[in-house]
Length: 563
Picture 1 (cartoon, rainbow, N blue to C red):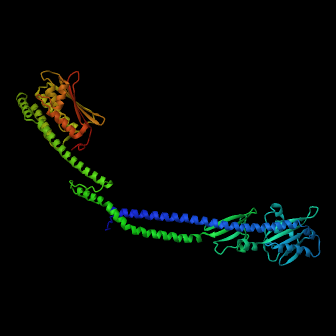
Picture 2 (spheres, rainbow, N blue to C red):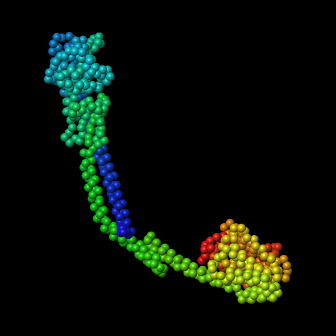
Picture 3 (cartoon, one colour):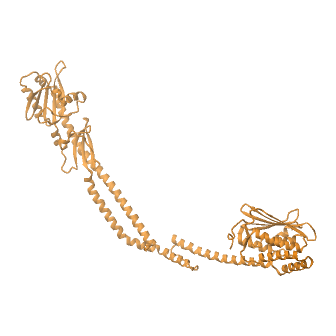
């Protein structure tokens, strides 16, 4: 059998407070980590961007210098004269080499003589003259075409005319004769490796790799193998880009984000760990505080348990003027009301029992029994035994129903049957001086009404409403349904009653042979059983007679209104 673990309210509140505190701490740690990480990344990007701008300016300065060298050289009359047909081209080579010597960053200068189909190459280290169809070389064609597309932007190329194929940033311009015919093309080359070491080599403390990119393609990097590949940014990498002037080149830095986030992650874990231990340390004081705050509630629970065991005199102690104090006060008020209701219920039961006993004792009075038995006796003498047997049977049935104590409610059908027996006896007594009519609406026979509810009204109508010296007397009992209510009417065609007599009858102030005890009993029981829904009143129409009207809830449940 499993043991049930029951946590008291203090423990539950402690767990709730600790849980909320842990969640808030974790949320703040995650939020702090995210904000700090984002801030560090932004600061890092700004720092790297500033560094890249400096390097971009260096690259622009080298490119501008190469462009100026190329532009000034093609306008030189000396260069134009040296491009004429020559056997050795030594002077041309020397002039081209001087461009390299006198300008830092210029690695080599080529001059392509179109008519001779010669490529004169000169650098600080060496020089050579090559022959062949050089316009078929892609890079030469690109450089020549670049002059027409964007003369200010260098063309990145790989020199396919040399044994050691270097990557260059090249400016190319045509050399024209006096007739405007292009007779040669001058190429000013800047070595990609020198550009890398001058502008792109990372600092020792740099977190990323620097690259020079043109239209998404790497043209200079720390590894030569990456040149010509596409720049790709991974999910865990930080990319910073800065354009290099107007030349279509972009200076890029690609860094690993995990290097930045590593120390931040360690700091976040330490913060969460410290917060966890602080919460554990605070658990003790929080529990004591909660215990002190919940002490009045614990005492209120004890009072409720005492009431549960039947100690209705128990009352809760009010410790503080707060919500718990208000709850204890309301609990005490509820107990007061419960005791009052119990007293009222006991009183109502006693009144109801007294009313029932009064109704029974009133209906079976010695005077009524004497008159009835006398009538039966005279009937036996005058009429013979058959009719006497019928009368005796009716009386016995009436006596049985009237004196029975089996339930306070009977059906309309049973009540009408009892009234019919009573009328049969009264008709014998008064020599059939009146007749009775019963109008019971179908469907109402099985509704329950208080026992002996109609008979006192019929008795009142026979004894005090009719003049038995005359003929044509009539008593009508009708039962009908009005919505959720049942309406019972007992009418006679006697002389009727004034409004004052009706008022006295209903208030107990009417004095005659019939003193109204039965009427008061009916009204008292209606109020006890049905409250405001049970009503009784009298009518005295202008055409004569008296009508007693009872209104009560229509119910087919015998126990619905039992007290």
